[in-house]
Length: 121
Image 1: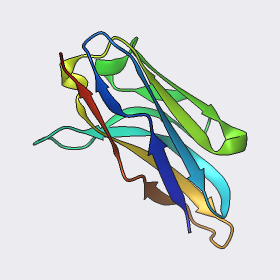
Image 2 (image 1 turned 45 degrees about the vertical axis):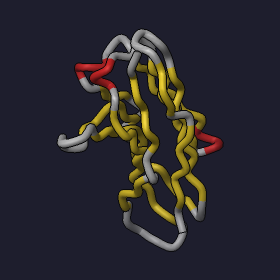
Image 3 (image 1 turned 180 degrees about the vertical axis):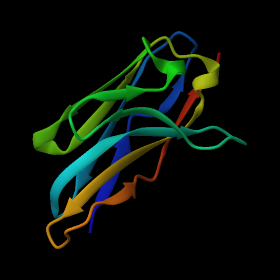
Image 4 (image 1 turned 60 degrees about the horizontal axis):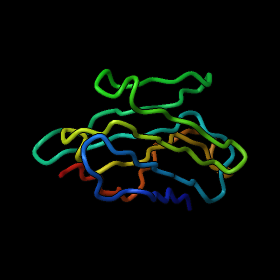
């Protein structure tokens, strides 16, 4: 059983900062990719930032220069440092990992429960 547990969401004023964390736990053999998506009310879920299998990063254009994804491989944890937050960043942020468990030869997608980020004055 794999669990992704997120933390760090909340209410922040425009221009402020938040740091999200996501820890993957369980019988994990290998992590192919891990990162963050978000979903605003009435909109589709979208990629925010992601570590790919080769260790490179992908960012949504809307967050480049403001958000930074980092990771601790030993802890199977990723972080999202969000600076210069804007009201349009308001959404539920979901952690996602494509990983393989010790009893599987295939990689599967796993999602966290989501954490609310609200940017408002």
